[in-house]
Length: 314
Image (tube, rainbow, N blue to C red):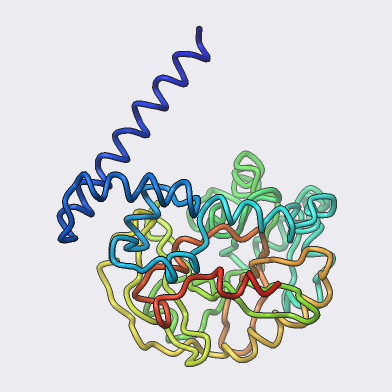
């Protein structure tokens, strides 16, 4: 009975989303609602496109030829199954193992407080005052927290708070490149690589936290700059615009990604994450890429072609 109720609730939720998207595209296009209704159904059957993807990708304005170049959720899951080796995925999911394997790319010291004595933790806190703490099992951007000794009675209280929050990985605060400080105190430069008889660069973006929201910006790889509007997780334009802002040291980031992709060729598709400092480029994270929708928003595309133009070749 519980299973039936859950299925019914999911159906109602899906129908509400479908209706909301249908109303949106009906207002945006010149077609009648019943025509778009059947077109969304057809695209679901033909391309595996959800009603959300139909709206986001502006499918109502695309020819059949262009539609077939877009990666849908169904296509993404199929490709991801082929490119991601789940047997060794822990090497990037476990951040302690990740840091150990790629220590030459970190360009800094990262410590696991579970492996440190109290005296070592206390000295590290006293020497640096402000630290970044984060989880071993979650992504850097979603889990990091800034710890400032001035907010605590002593290093012991600060260390205890880190342990209570399970922020076992600790390191010094980053000295981020000044142009990126205009955007946010901590901007992550993410690059997606695919190993295909060599390393291909598929997509690039910036990400940063704004309160609880994660804001994303598309990077034009050829011109090494932000293109178009930054967007929140609901696809709404961010309050500030950085269109055209050149990403510092981006060439160095790409070089590192190609080297990393070669080293981890067993996992053919990876999203690598970096912090750009004044003097160095710091590798901070890696994970399974799932941001295929953002990368195919039409304002970012060349000739209205989605990602499948590339993936069909591999």
